[in-house]
Each structure stands twice: as C-alpha cells, then as structure tokens.
Image (cartoon, rainbow, N blue to C red; front, side):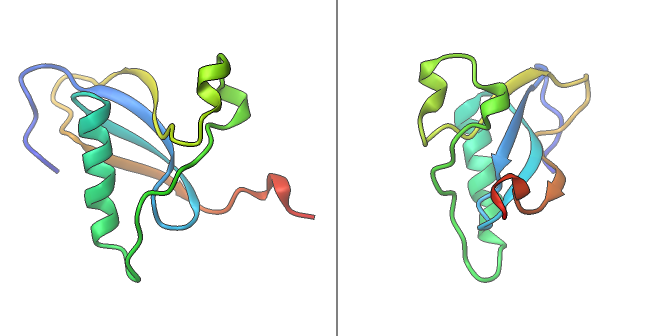
Amino acid sequence: MNQPTANPLNAYLTWSLGIDLPGLSVVYAEDPAHAMRLLEDYCLGAQPKHSLRPAYMPMEIRRNASDNGADIHLFPVGVASPGVSAGILVIDRGEDVRFYD
C-alpha cells in the first residue's frame, strides 16, 4: 500500500476485480480515476494475465437509469478513516451464484 495522504481518501465499492470472476472489494482512492488505476495495477499481478472488463452494477444498488451502463465499476460509499492508505481491500473473490441453475 501507498503512504497515507494528507487529505482523506474516498471509499468505493467495486464488484469487478478484473480477474474473470466477480469479487467484492473496497477501493480507497482520491477519485474514481485513481481507483481505476489501482484496480488496473491489481490486475497486473494476476496469472494468467487479466484486465478489467465491462461490468454491470448490481441491481440492488442501482439508483437511476445512468447506473445501467456496462462500464460502471465503482460505487461511492464514503470517506476513509484518517490514516488509511490508498489501496484495495478485497472482501471476497468468488462467483455470482444468482444466475446458476
């Protein structure tokens, strides 16, 4: 992880870890562009190589029609506590079982 920043970081929820399976994580970053760079960097260490793919926002957290795009990877959930460093906190790596028979 990076050194803590002077200003508090934003916290973003993401369900697209870029490793071919949905995953739930919190990304602590300055802004959405910074969060996406952190996710791209996270993908660099994956074997075999992976990349972020378009992912639909889960229906449970969509607020309006603009949330229906396939290119949304982040949902703002708040501000990080003081002293939190920029980075990704992976909560779960796994498959979305809602669509399984």
